[in-house]
Amino acid sequence: MFKIKKIISITLIILITLSSIGFAEDLKVQEKAAKRLITLDIVTGYEDGSLKLENNITRAEFATLVVRLIGRDDEAESYKKDTKFTDVKGDFWGAGYINIAVKEGLFNGYEDGSFRPNNNITYGEVLALMVRILGYDDTLDPEKKWPLNYVDKANELGINRDKILMPNSQASRGDSFVFVDRSLVVDLKKN
Image (spheres, rainbow, N blue to C red):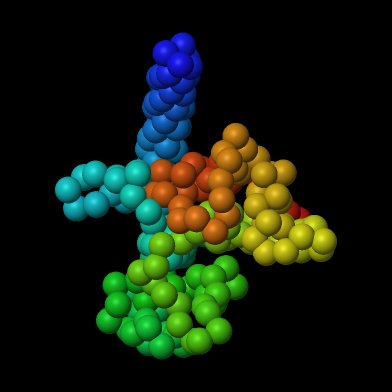
């Protein structure tokens, strides 16, 4: 009995050590991606200068990032008006970004007429947005349902390589920055 407990203890220590190493590597990749996106004015940190890479990212925050990515950030103020969504009024800080992202066909709302700007975005939604921006949404596998069709296409394009994720789980800021950063080197699909 003592041997089994010892083996289990050693195995747990090895697993914890390996996961810590993997976490440290993930953090380095996230920090590098965030720095590149900051340099390109796609990402900004919080008022205190932090990036909070481990935090989740909201739909409104990601809409802002997407609008900056497509180079329309300077138009956000002029688009700041009531949206077609019941939960995004013109005085909401992200209304302009949301309106542009929706107008560009990148973001959708929900069947109940809401956008849910403060909800955390999922990995599936992040990857779907990156595939749409790159123009590959018409090349999805018709046999697969959403979001797996987008996740697979993003993996094929190298956006989420080496990342095992649950598509419906909430995306972290750090992982989202990595996916956006990797998207910058993917060729845009020609029509």
